[in-house]
Length: 337
Image (cartoon, rainbow, N blue to C red):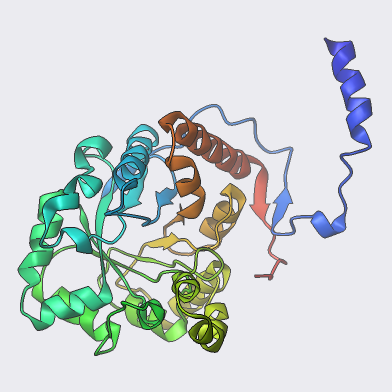
């Protein structure tokens, strides 16, 4: 066997050269300072619950034919590996429980992992205008969710053929919501991230967390444009390429902390363009606020089939993350996006 392995090494050596263009300059590799990881990391407190992994499955889907299977697979993974999930938009079940089973995952995820409902800012604005915040309370309570994610998506709503019109600045709606109901809130974007002033306003609020949903991953503004006619698509296409990356947003938050001092919101979900565990490890390590990293489309790809496929993907992600923790440190000279 050793002889065969050595022969493989000789044959593969010619194909395994790496060069400077491929070098990941975000990290310093320190092979002398740690042994291989042998067990899971110690649990830590995030969103009020003890989690075992710095991972988050970002909001994806609900109310479609395959949504129940996807959400159930994700909830099982959260339970098995010890991390949290955000549901896709729960608008469909606000007043009609036909698709309730697509979202009702508390029994699957169990009582110990973070599990959050989700509504769009336009829907929240409408409910508050109608003085029907009880619908939000009933939604979160009925799902036995830990709180509500409000996704802020003005560009997506504008480009969506059936989109709603937002009548006031979303920050005002968030502030009104917090003054009228006492449910933990997370605020997120949907694929284009947020600039400094938006982050600053959110950090001043007692939110449970801010989720980035930054530029570089699934972009729902672009997705909606792809559904529209060609003339509209051509006119608005440049908007699909504006936004802030997760790296830019981590840097912005860190700078804002120096300017503001202690923020009211003290937890982040770093998502948007996170392709793998090294992206997640880099950004979580850079963040001066406690953070986990979120993925959506990569998880979705493995969550539509057999649960074992998703389980293997998650296990490999988390083991590789622990390997990075043991042998990689952040390169202080790296400043790229």
